[in-house]
Length: 205
Length: 357
Image (cartoon, rainbow over all chains, first blue to last red; front, side):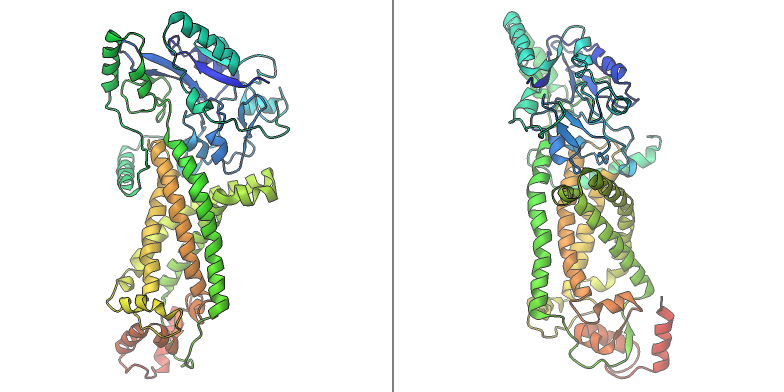
């Protein structure tokens, strides 16, 4: 089965924030929560680079490891999801995540953050596929519809690739060969550099 | 939510003060000079177009002014924050493993001591005359601190070890409820404990100042093993160790690190919160281990210790003479009689009535 990954091609990203908008629109995300963001390095300097970043669905996810109620789970496609009914809003996943993916709807005074929200790779949550509860808590389940993440599909320069890790790596490799530069695959070492933690038996695919 | 400028500034000052106290992580983020790499990248572009090494070095540092994002928030312009992995290794590793064993082993040692030596009994006959050891204020401060401490300890243990100990027994849903309860209690009792710690310090600092005769107590380990009476002031060196090492040092560490995590809305970054969490957990586990010794000696470990704090704050003169001889002599001298002489019953009962809760 495919192992889902994100890859952002820094040679192509033009910082249009189309992915950010697509994500907000697709999942009807509340104000203040940003499942995806675009960061520009050396803004305004020749050779500036932009990268779109969200949850990378790590192979050995730190959020999963530190969650005190073990509310995270991994699908058979390697997508890291969580159960908002179990989440206690402690913020440990936010401490642990290298990418700044976990988001909270409240500002956190007295530790009241609300339930954590993050990118689902457009794969919904533990509720039945396409149920109103799933949409309300996690957004649309595009994977169950046979589609890929909205951010990557909406990307105007096809800088952001989301899908089967082997397929997007091939696409990227061809690009690097053709243009002869920009071979750095940002974030992959951090996200996928460790042995894959196997999904729990019977995990939702 | 960020309207109160003065408050924000104060909190920043507080955070900075805390950083000075908190141990730094082994591989704290290497601070790259702001803008330096941007210039470096521009130079690199002239000589080697296509070589983006300076850019990629920037990825891990967030303090680069030319690294920007449209998303507002704290550290949203940071692409990779590597402190989280260190924190994870520390928390899920040594803190959970050694901390867990400490919480198991210390009660076993105490149990062993109890089975071996039994309760420390009063050796002489109770005199029947009582003197005041803890005023109503002392007792209120002590018990407010103690009860909030126990609530924080139990809820903290649930959050650190519950996943391994309770979750397999309770199942996900029930354990999640328990964790929500623990987290909420922890977050709202915490500030009360901070206030209590300050009151504890003010209330008991005078009689906890070290004295020359404390050395004798330390050298003889308080007679805990030999059973002999080592004279001491109102508090002996063991109690002073608990006061300075536990209540004061660990109390301030857990309070400061706790407040950093409790109010994440003062623009503190993740590195500081990771450090605060690790410090909080280490200090809290040590605090709990120390408190077990205090709780043991204050309850079943020593005859007559619990009743004093629990009820009217009065102790028998014989108890005072055996355990805190210098203090007893002081009290006796102050009440204008030779050590051991009977106080007037009227004065004693008036004192007793007056301080009854």
